[in-house]
Image 1 (spheres, one colour):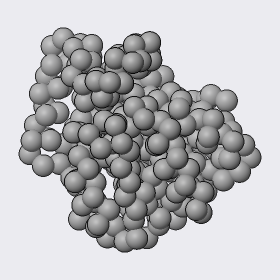
Image 2 (tube, rainbow, N blue to C red):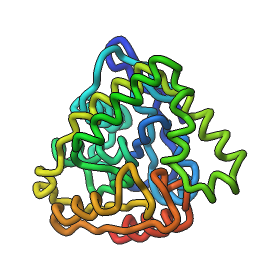
Image 3 (cartoon, rainbow, N blue to C red):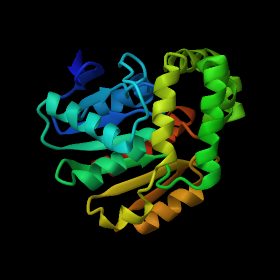
Image 4 (spheres, rainbow, N blue to C red):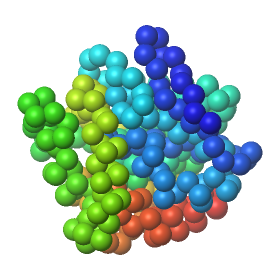
Length: 263
């Protein structure tokens, strides 16, 4: 069941599905929308009440003006929980969504029961921050489509792209729905990402999961995040790049299902 949340002059596109059970909230990567979780929906819908939303500037959600911060993105996630009357939920996010989950768990520890943080970073070293300036410049010059080829190279292995042309076309259609201002607004948040030194405050079960050939959120960076988080788990998804949940869904699902099932 899809609905919209008024955020004061603009709105988020949100959806509820699944069973009447524990709640899980899903958050998409930059350049995607909630449909990116298609390979996980059957698994999750069978057990959870699944809440998902399109990040501001993405999919069916509106694009508020200006640069965004992770405080803004965390506030949006809280608004989704409140809209559906969920006092607390498990959370799964990938890349930008995983970072949003870290911010949510740090700022609202009583609202998150466990966290799957996939293919994400917790800091913004200079090369990472500069890459967003370059991509935003290219998008403003040539439109969001100008970023697709480089994005596809980072998101998926060459083998997956070659074997799945129709699915790749669907993902491209999802990507180009992202507005340039929405992309730029989220990129501004990524450039100021600064959670690494706070991860020691997390006191909930956390799974860091990463594609083994991810260059956007390299495995070594995620191992560092796991080491900084008390009791955290770390898992690699083999033969997967940045969007590991689509690139290698069977292994991703098995890893996540085991973690969520250990509650």
